[in-house]
Image (cartoon, rainbow, N blue to C red):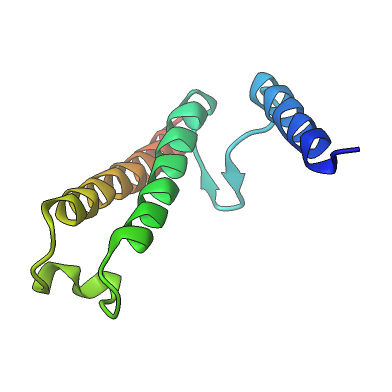
Amino acid sequence: MNLSKYAKVCFFASLTLLSANRAVAFNWGFVRVPDWMDPYLALFFIAALFGCLVLQVIKPCGVRVNQLHRVKTSPLVNFVRVLFITIYSMFIIMLFVGMALRRHA
């Protein structure tokens, strides 16, 4: 009996059910966005998390992430750093625009 196989099946089944359910709204108390923005915010959030993880893996040892702009690194590290900053900025901008749209409505 391979428990990890069943855990993966349960995980993907729950993701499928949650993605089809519109009752699960993006609501963190005071942070509310329109329902139609949920897939876009989820996409940018997952992309930002993935970019952060990739940046943590490929950065040079002994260099903090907030100090990467001061250190000479490979073009790949610089590209991932700029891509992460761009994706995270787009996520935050969409979050604030969504909050403004929700408040205006």
